[in-house]
Image (cartoon, rainbow, N blue to C red; front, side, top):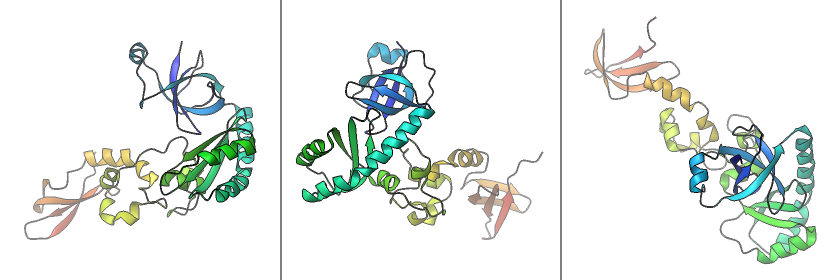
Length: 269
């Protein structure tokens, strides 16, 4: 048996799935079957021999499933049609939510690949008791119903919009699967932290996803430059590095007489 870890697109659950002789790589979209329905998932990692022997689960609990195939063009077209159908259910669902007077903002909807499970995504300021709502939704749509509460970043992905760069949100336009975490250290490594939180915060109120895009370049470049606080000797004398300009590959030196000098750090060929 050949197993791999997959993450379900609709509810972010993890599965270990048998992929038989399929050659899969991390990031592939696959159609899989569980004991509930057929759904689409992303390949996230292979299962190692040690994990098979020790029966190790990631993130607590992992269910078993079988991968049917990697998504093909026909599957992707079918998925688009299902998406249109699911979004068409939002108006009726909003009416039912309003009837139950629940503090929920419906954002998006998805149908499982076999059209048996309907997932509604919503945001809310806190926990919501939607047991009676689920019962009515199941009766109305005649499907297995799942309500998935999402955070600020996923809300932005569902709603969409234009970022400070003038482009559509990356999370909406092309980022697939779970949105990767972004830390303040990433802004610091790119000399952006001192510009203030408003310059590195996206419309969702969280750090911008694009802080990850050039991070490796900045780390590699900084590793080859004198560190801030280090001493450096040039023809004008000895100075302390007070700042770096990664894009120009220069550092600024401060001398004892409180004068400053920008020094090119490009290696001489």
